[in-house]
Length: 114
Image 1 (cartoon, rainbow, N blue to C red):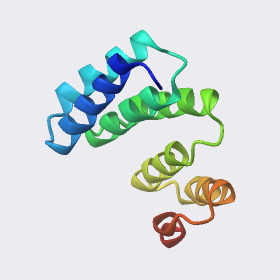
Image 2: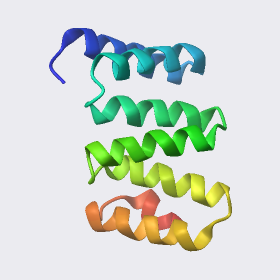
Image 3: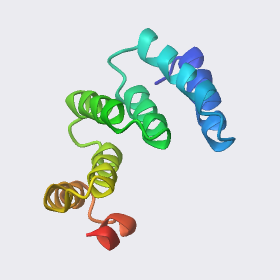
């Protein structure tokens, strides 16, 4: 995304996540989604914040939107697998992990989880 406003919002959201200020991160990514709803990474970043907040159903909704916009987004796929593992849905998690590796076979953490 070449828009400097969006880049700044993403950077501030990522910095807030690193500082464990999830409310600020959520606000930043909400603004990204509001301004450019077709930008998959805005949805993916917000999904990550929801995951960190333990709001798995909201995270899954954003992961779905990410994958609708970018079907090969292996980060979103891996995030979905982590949620499935948390929910102890091992069969579906295995399916998603294998799909993730089919997109990017070099993901060591994904291979390890599988």
